[in-house]
Image (cartoon, rainbow over all chains, first blue to last red):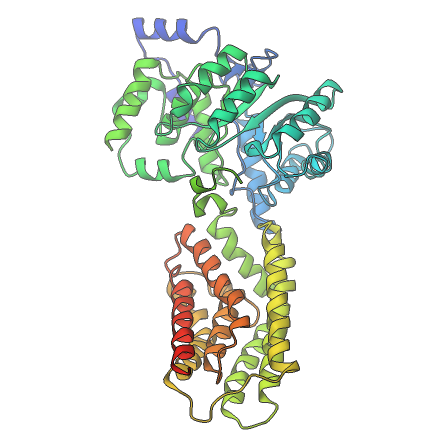
Length: 317
Length: 222
């Protein structure tokens, strides 16, 4: 797979499109020169700070909730290892996701043998209806992850956001947290979401975005750009349904024009090529799939006409 | 939960199907050979239902209650809770069902069976037999590992089905003991449905049949 990706990242594109693509993406997309393996990984700056984040992260909904199954935990740890080896940094979870936080903590611990903090951009959520119990939940989550502090904490699905947001902003002001965000999924509560984006000093929003769910392009993405808010994309595969449906069909020939070797990379490159998007967080417990996903962080991204082509093609399938 | 109408059952699925079935595999390995004891207890219930011992109702209710209590603690609380934050509520529900069975069958001694059972009561016995002997084999027939078998007395699904069968086989409907196993069948069926399990409809079908026959018997005895 690795060799395929490297082959795919060769630049056969000619002239005009390549120049246009370069012009369109240069201010936003840059290689992340963290390691030899990730030297060609694409990154995006966090709008509020300029810190570069790799465009492909790792979600944990369902996939890392394996309980106390030691075999499955080792498998998840291997997924995390491959993810970081391929230049990944952003890992996202929630107290809602069962044992996922503990499994991430186990995987991160194995990554560094517990000697030093893992080079992770730790993104988690607060998900509890009581505002006063929020700090306790956050501390439990931190212990599960076994990280000194979270990089990003988000109010999960806007649950009790009026109470949690002041807590998170106070933590950020005290240096206990770097970024604050809110999340929703599958298009829920977008009006309230926009009001928070317009009125609160948040750094990130997390929304559902994929080839078939593009409502956020209308108002949330423009607002994010205007307010300099980073966007994390969840469910880029529609919880697996989208990729399962497209995988019944052959990969189109034009996939080579955006250095995609499989459907996962096409879907992910579609999501992260929107200028408002900072990164996408596909979830998987498969070593093969995380390798495929990380392949979307290298090579060329689709330009606007290619994005339209991807949508048209998949809608016809 | 705002905009609750926008949520689908799949939005509440917290784990992959392989994780769910691995849970049973590891659980079965942990508690072995308890399964032999509970299956024997199930056979004993069937035998007792045909006996004339005056204490049979109490013995059956106590046996079944112990199974519900065991599942509440050993399965829901100790294991399922690791992958499903709602399992604590399931444990509580199963413990309540155990107490209801003790109240009806042991304390009040109201678990009786007709010497000449009706057709509906016979169907109840059939459902109990199905839960004991057939339901554990379904997974195997559907291609799942035999080590992941869900068995009466230690796994919630066959225990709920067996309880519904038993309650249908008694000489009167004990409505108070029906809701929890019925709701469990609906809930577990939904979980299996969103996991695309081929046997997802089985539990809701059994629950519907028991509910329908219970109403029918209730009406016909007025």
